[in-house]
Length: 331
Ligand SMILES: NC(=O)c1ccc[n+]([C@@H]2O[C@H](COP(=O)([O-])OP(=O)(O)OC[C@H]3O[C@@H](n4cnc5c(N)ncnc54)[C@H](OP(=O)(O)O)[C@@H]3O)[C@@H](O)[C@H]2O)c1
Image (cartoon, rainbow, N blue to C red; front, side):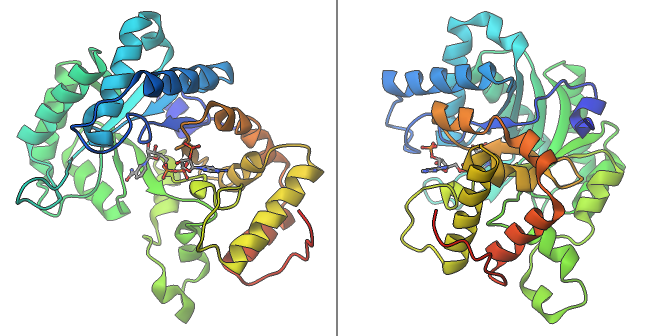
């Protein structure tokens, strides 16, 4: 089995990651999380560990800090967990508050202070990986470099990466920063196929509506940067979540996924994720589910990626794209 790019940077990361955006209850800071939220988190963490998932993705903004604070409470109750886990968080987004709009901030002061807040909420001494969450149009690469140097030298962050960035953003920052950027977290799934479409539709009119840096996947592969996929379960659109705006293409793709799951005696989640993980960039899906049973349902995803034939991969892609009907009549 080929190693993940993360593993070649000395990080013993699992093939799947757990995204922690859904933990902590509401995004209203005045509503505290409850014992029920804590139970949900602990069950999810234990389900993940039981199938070898050791990688947890946070951001300082998730449920306005509550997701990290809850996670910190769990780590405090079970201190031996810390060394079993790879903990990643992000900073650089400031949510709208009062009269100020949502905005991005890659100033040194903001990055360094954000990490202090993250470590304090999580109750830990260091982050394994810090991602810069979304590109700040006002970013000064030298200032970002200073922030990264300070965090690395203090031991507060071991590795660095980015999220939602072009290859040009990565190159601009990397030219100033001596630490390698080893992750780029992007929206990628069967429902959000720009990362595939951009390469396929090159030089075609249909490609004009596609929003993805054409060179990005190749750039990450060439530079050993881990592609992480946010939104990999497509909010359950193909695996059973009720959605009032489901399209015919989504219904057909869901039927084909259910058919493959029956055929291969696995879960629908494993087929859906297998499609994403078959990509040669060795994409690491960041699962957004807060449900322990759904985490367990993802266990077989890597094996399904290996078993998925090229014909099945293309049938799933074309069906989800609305250009093909696989002719599956019943689920
Ligand atoms: N870098 C970025 O800009 C960025 C942006 C967004 C998210 N993220 C990260 O990526 C992670 C995943 O993102 P995501 O939450 O958008 O992705 P996701 O994994 O595609 O979706 C998870 C959501 O779908 C629901 N779901 C999945 N299957 C379902 C089913 N069969 N029936 C009903 N509901 C179902 C889950 O509900 P249950 O909890 O009930 O299972 C959960 O609310 C986040 O946690 C976060 O760590 C990063």
